[in-house]
Length: 263
Image (cartoon, rainbow, N blue to C red; front, side, top):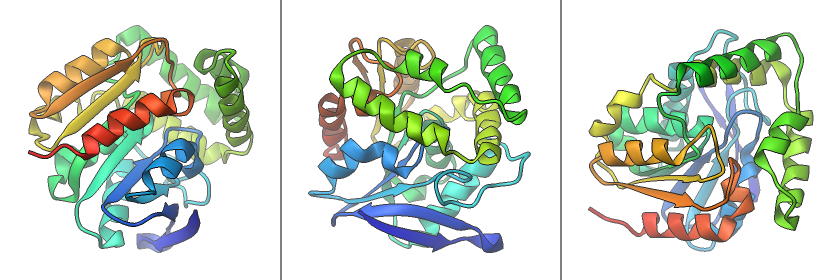
């Protein structure tokens, strides 16, 4: 992978990894992760695509946004980043919070998105689920980070899961706490912001999750897919929130079919 930076407005920097040639595939990770969190997809798709995996603001080497940034600010950041690349419409995929950003970009700037994919996305959480996520966001603002709980929630005992958990643990241990807290707060409060915009998304849309993800449920995936004009829900059995790392072959096959879809 080639490490690159893109200059944005207000002297901000977006850091990303780029690998391969061909049609562009832009990947946006979730809260607490970094661009490398797409490593199985970068390796697989860079054989035939120009893969661009970007550090979200306040993660990796990308400049953070203001402490009070909301989801719309992250969406505007993604729009600025894609526009600055000057490569036209891209295939855009996001995981977890990255999926909320992807949805916002696809709904508001369809000219920038050829195809969109949402992995382990959230959609209109219940009030109980939303309160729990907001509580975790508030805890992060105090400087307290609980790494073990999400690791136990996201990973099982298979070897591929243990290896992925080690990588995820290292990213969480090294995340910028301020950037993490800002992004998590936006994530906690942002699931409904673009939820009613799915009908405006006309490009091929893949919505993927695992049956073992209690927060990004199969029911949510089906609802999102049913609203999109060309949406397809894929639910992988017995997989959890980090499905792109723990079931890479199945995820890559689903994404390959999505990338080959035309309308």
